[in-house]
Amino acid sequence: MHTLTVAELVNDRRADELYTLPASARVAEAVALMARHEIGALLLMTEDGLVAGLFSERDLLVRVVAAGRDPATTPLSLVMTRDVKFVTPATPTEAALALMHLHRFRHLLVIDGPRVHGLVSMRDLVVQIITRGEGRYESAVREAALPSPTRGA
Image 1 (cartoon, rainbow, N blue to C red):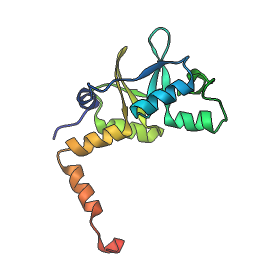
Image 2: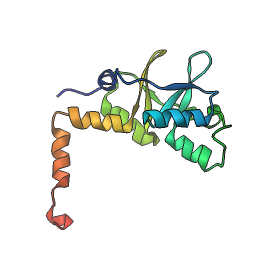
Image 3: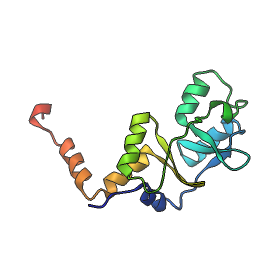
Image 4: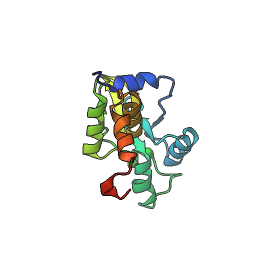
């Protein structure tokens, strides 16, 4: 059986742009970019081009809206997730999902040394498993959707 890796997902999505902003940008800029491209997270960079952090919908909700901060004046560096978890392209998809579940986050950076390969979401990984999982997940989904005697058909 073939083990799906994060590299396959990143390669499939090569046409997708990795959206970034400087960590010094304002929250309002990030929200506009995320809304325009219908994405749930952005990679934030330092002036030196290094990864500074990640800004996600959850960061917006918890650290900006719930905290009563003004998106027009709040710098992303103040509200971003600094401890960005990452995997290498060779990481099996299921291991990446397990890491996300364990640490309770929805986005994962894919890097190999200093090179950023991409940013993947939990949804991206689930779709990859279902569509390329050699049939075992599709049959489990079909079984779960069928009425069973114990669930009151």
